[in-house]
Length: 277
Image (cartoon, rainbow, N blue to C red):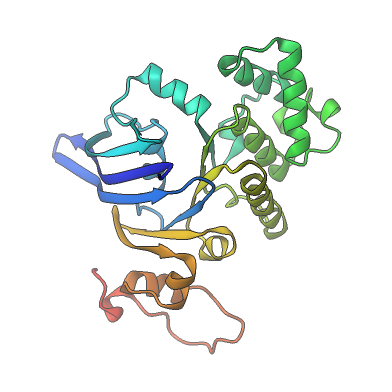
């Protein structure tokens, strides 16, 4: 059985001039322990898809039709309280900029301990020890000391490791990672991607990796969903997508990736590849 099934998902934003359909019939699934890459350019609907899965769709956005099923249970129609419980226990989230998710006035330890105690019946001392262990597992040096530091005392890569630790506090079965390496330099990107692969290997946690970077998905994902203008234009195993793309938009994305051995030439637009303008 699949861990997650997204079936014909439609998300709309009502407005004074009518209703905007931001996602139109998105469907994909992810198996336990699988890494699924969701790729596309800015505005394709990638982050909106992730927000819909974890129940953080900003009003007035709403799921107009379709279903999101986690472990056989439909979750798109749950109350805010029940969805908050699932988001804490079964689904973890990692966002692009940790500074928007971490409270600058609280130490890292306080934020981790509060998150752990919100979802697990443990004492403050037990939660602190668990938090130190998570920081160690995610590669934070001297975690017993760094746990009492504030977010601004960490580098960008270390803050992202803290966010990963935060997402793992309740041992979720699914992680939604929305552009987790975009703001990092190439070396740190590689370290974070290696960490995510290590987590998958050690815990069996499945991962939805949302990114615009095809190089990222080629390295770590098992399957790929290609999105454009709120639609899923292609999906399949990473090998087949890269070796034999079927949709002109996918081909255009691949053509836009620079290669050392390529001759200098003009980039092909979607109109010249037969794609939808």
